[in-house]
Image (cartoon, rainbow, N blue to C red; front, side):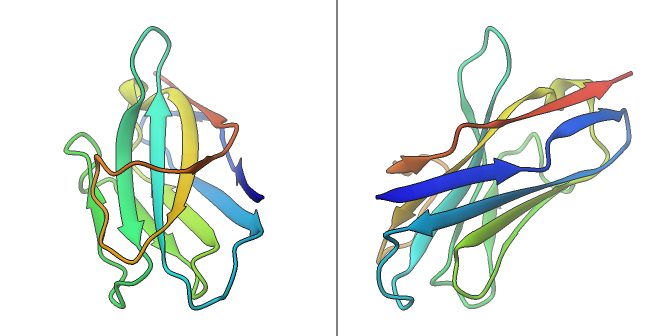
Length: 129
């Protein structure tokens, strides 16, 4: 069983920053296994949307982002691909949502529409004006 746990949510004013963390633990298998890791969010009354994804098999740490967060959010991960981060800068009220981390072992590159197997419980981010 694989567990996914987010942390770091909170309340911040417009223009502020937050950093979310995500730990992937449990039966993650051999450390050579590569992972698709992603951040998603869901605001009240809206569908869940992808924020950004990264494939740990990319040595340069290249991440794909939703247009709404490009230039403001940055995804990174540790060397083993079991800890994922989301640095959020210049936050806007429309960034207010429950943020979820997701993971899937993969031998291929992933994108914003890739399916994920394991999901966290979410962490709330609230941006006030």
